[in-house]
Amino acid sequence: MTVAELAGRVAAGERLTRDAALKLYLEAPTALLGRLADGVRQRKHPDGLVTYIIDRNVNYTNVCVARCKFCAFYRPVGSPEGYTLGFDEIFQKIDETIRLGGGQLLLQGGHNPDVPLEWYEDLFKQVKTRYPTFRLHALSPPEVIHISRLSKLPVPEVIARLVAAGLDSIPGGGAEIMVDRVRQILNCYNKATADEWLDVMRQAHRAGLRTTATMMYGTVETVEERLEHLLRLRALQDETGGFTAFITWSYQPQHTELGGIEATGVEYLRTLAIARLVLDNFDNLQASWVTQGGKVGQLSLAFGANDMGSVMIEENVVRAAGAEYCMDEFEVVRNIESAGFVPMRRNMHYDMLGGPVFRDREVPRMLELAVARADGSGGEAADLAAYEARSAGAKQTRGDVLRNQ
Ligand code: SF4
Image (tube, rainbow, N blue to C red; front, side):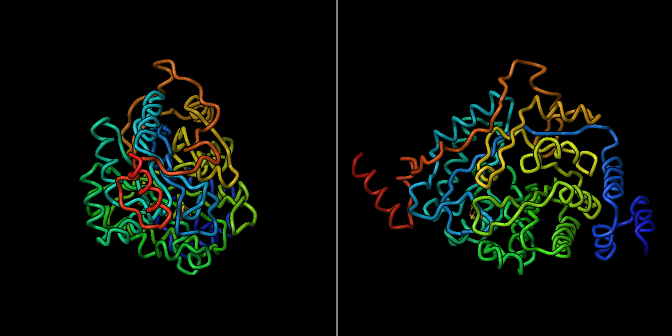
């Protein structure tokens, strides 16, 4: 079948097969891919709204035993630059988020052997006691697996305990490319195989949680493997319907063990567009302005995205790999409106919350993203001393804290 014939089928609403998606991804002109993806966006969102959320990416710890080769964020156990935030630091971040009109934390972190399940439960319970309507979009599938292994509890039980403590939804991080050949090369196979990642999401959806899905492309995978990733997500969405949105971004190579160069803006737009065409059972696709910058982020709205993602207030992971873009609510709204859409705030479940906060009340401009801790200020918060540690260093530190109390 020719590209033109495939384009006609997509325009008629037919589901793309693997072979058809591959042909379009490899051969369709970029403008045509964009038009097709934009057609899907229009069919799914005929109201002309482009949504966004105000929340904050808090990385509670950068200590990680997984050591993915594409990651510039983590520090090994025992590193003086390793940190774990305390509850009070996290509450302060929530207070700031609420002042800026936000209502959610995206809470993710490294696989820290010295942070047990009980720490998460206590944190979530305290957050919900202090801020009853505040949402916790927390712990990507590999973190859930890590906690399951640490606690020796099955994944469904870990999810049930976290939900009982206050977990609202699960972010789709750690998916990278869901092909085990790629995961082995990137050293992220042990943290979660492709099947394990998908199964955490399956269990979460069965438990009634909604989640997002992601794809980080541009490392060592082939185009066929990117499509395999998308097709596996589509199959799980057919099974559970639990994904609210899909987000893709390019690998950020600076300061990583893997190194290499970043994919171009056109490759990003083509990848976003093919995702919009393949993922016909996903309602929402987000623009990744945090990796692509505001201008390509805005162009995403013509390549299948209907959501500008997050006014994220804080970001640590992408920044560690060299991308330091910042957009506050004013800037996100300016980009949405100049692309011809109506901006609308939402929550993680895509309930519409209203227009821009800064049009209702004065909100301080935010010209750079906050960070978890000032650069180089490692160390774990004193309240960790109440929790069981696994590593020799943390056992020693916590023992010292308790002896000095
Ligand atoms: S990507 Fe996540 S799991 Fe992998 S090394 Fe970085 S912090 Fe650890």
